[in-house]
Image (cartoon, rainbow, N blue to C red; front, side):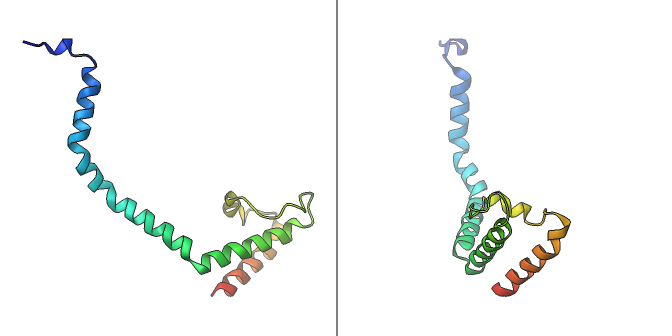
Amino acid sequence: MLQISTIKRLLPRLRSLSFMLRYEELIQDIKPDIVAATAACEEVKSSKKFARILELILLLGNYMNSGSKNGQAFGFEISFLTKVCSVTYMSVCVVYARIAYCFDAVS
């Protein structure tokens, strides 16, 4: 009779078997999330209004950047979008006015 202690790599093998037995259940659990994320990506990719907002933010950023030491740098990193409103107080009114214009232009 074979003893359990003589089976090489028993724990990884048992984990593999357990995963294989639960695979379909795991897939069914995450499938709605994957479908929702894929649909959201497609919506963002095909949204004309979202593309227009990004275009206007790029235009605004290039305008604000034109007087700085990086004046020749056109474009922005996507992380910039979270910083759009974190500018000096003097620029806040201008930025909000430009953002309001952007949303009006898109609507």
